[in-house]
Image (cartoon, rainbow, N blue to C red):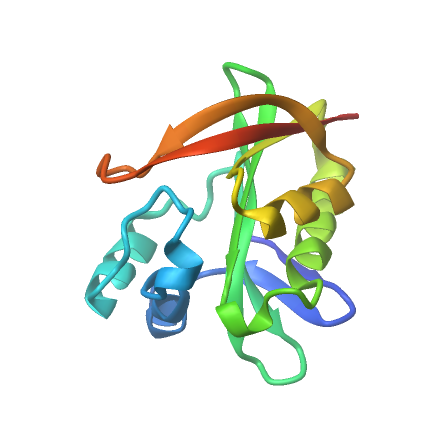
Length: 171
């Protein structure tokens, strides 16, 4: 969805095709990609194609870039996507490695949740993360999400499978 949200340190806005080189920085980083379902990008042009393929007017998809107010640098992205069949909002995010552990993802995701809550009904938010990904666990816990069950997932190309946990927050 086309929105702009400001937090104390960030501007959250739609990622556009011209942002492909910034997005390539995290899409091509093995540390960032380690637990993502997507395969590692090795060509900036493929990131541009991905950004061009997205429907930025989809009212059920709030997938935004995280821009540092101080520098204007795009440091990551994430958001919530509504699953109509389950009546659940699915959370997802990624961030440049050198910005991990500084609270940016929690700040951005809380702002997105707050924004959507003003215009849409949120009954449930769910997220799945690899058990080894303790950073994602901490983010979800800070957002008020709680453990539901063990599960698993695999990368889109089926190259790797992860033991995972499903976290959930009901409103």
